[in-house]
Length: 316
Ligand SMILES: C[S@@+](CC[C@H](N)C(=O)[O-])C[C@H]1O[C@@H](n2cnc3c(N)ncnc32)[C@H](O)[C@@H]1O
Image 1: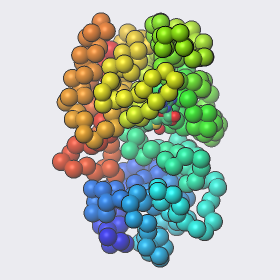
Image 2 (image 1 turned 90 degrees about the vertical axis):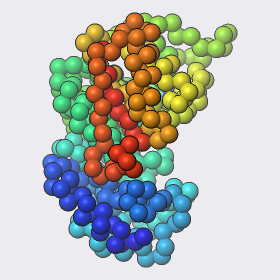
Image 3 (image 1 turned 180 degrees about the vertical axis):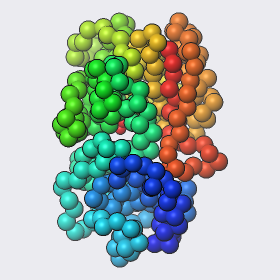
Image 4 (image 1 turned 60 degrees about the horizontal axis):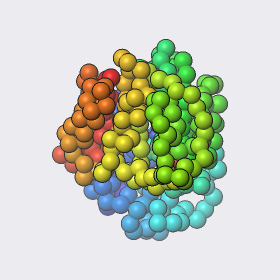
């Protein structure tokens, strides 16, 4: 586990690196599957970002890894348990993915990178699908999907997230690409229910304040929830209760449109999750016309071809 592991991973990616046009944001080593558990090495534009989840990097290892990468990058190490590179870390960095520009600063308020690289396949899909269509981006984070859709010619893009700082990065990403988008800074639950024309609900007698929006259907709805989160409106729990997220998303989708839904939980098998989506849609009176599964690009290899990130494009 060290520079040789990274060299082997780079060799496996030679074809991918050649084929990703105008892209400088790529996972170079997905350690959990490529022989170095607890370590990931990414290129984010001008930055070589090494992330560790278990053991900290040994002294000199960051420089040794940077030395075998065939690009001139600023090495940064983020230890997810806290800490990392002691030296100066760039406070600005812009990366490019298929010509679309994103803020990819390696240090910011949160611990996750500002752009999730395994979701590139979904951003590529939506850019190709969004021309002349409206897009609702739920759990938008830094609005990567929204920006890709807007660059692809979407007529309207609405991003929803309860983290103001993430939406601020989304605004900066829109500006970097010269596109316009809308933002709702609030919990997804009341917003998507109003858009779908459903009662907002909430715990009896204790309904939290929420942003008022008018009912509106979208041609494409992106539903990319975290595996678990709690808010005043209840829990997001993609293992135990995907239907309570999927149903309102589906009902906010225009006939002939689609929901791009995700499930990040490795222990949830693809077939079982797809069956839940089909069942929920049938019960909601909007049976699916079909589902297309997207798989992450080859920089995210998986055990037995079962990627933990499952992406289903559900045609309504
Ligand atoms: C997995 S990230 C989404 C990644 C994003 N779709 C992308 O393309 O990069 C999860 C996001 O959900 C947001 N979130 C979690 N629970 C929420 C809720 N109940 N309402 C609104 N946003 C929520 C978090 O703030 C975070 O930005």
